[in-house]
Length: 113
Length: 141
Image (tube, rainbow over all chains, first blue to last red; front, side, top):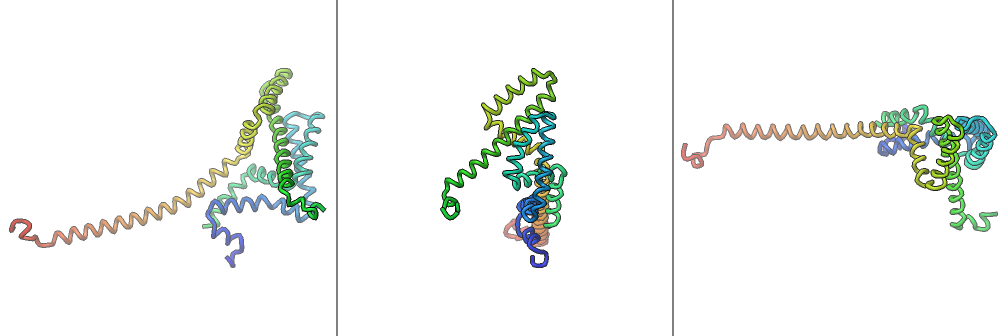
């Protein structure tokens, strides 16, 4: 444990499913931690989430005034009030979309042997 | 100031925070659910008036009447649609691999012990074959 560090120490102790969950949570919490450490990253992530919300609403109801109203309501809740939670959920969505969760699962299983 | 007055230690304040939190996300989920209904109906029904009527009926029924049921269903639908089942399948495969290794080791051990017992049984049998017959037991042959 001393040679390989804290993370590998945890990986050696816990059962496999717990290890995978720990690695996934750490991977998901990277962006909120970066946002907490660097304020500039917070604005960049907020900008990305705003475009993401607008794209989602536009795909559903097209481009109109209602699109902007619904986008603003969602931005108020998701970006203004709960930016850290939304960024974590966005990371989950991106990781699942790109298939990175499978990489984390199999990589953890391989490394913890 | 709030901390100095001791309001943060009051459980009512914490309840208020969490209730606001859940209410906010309930509202956000409702908006996304209505957007999903609109996208689905517009994709299936091209006639404008009919689609508006169907959207209205669906929103009234699903959001205003049976929202607790459809909220849970929609959350499961979203979680499955973004591919959470892939993670579950990967976890099953990975844990099955580990369980399989343990099962193989156990099987090897059992096989080894069975082989040892079989060898001991055969050795005992062969040892018994060379044993001289008891004349008293077999009638003096």
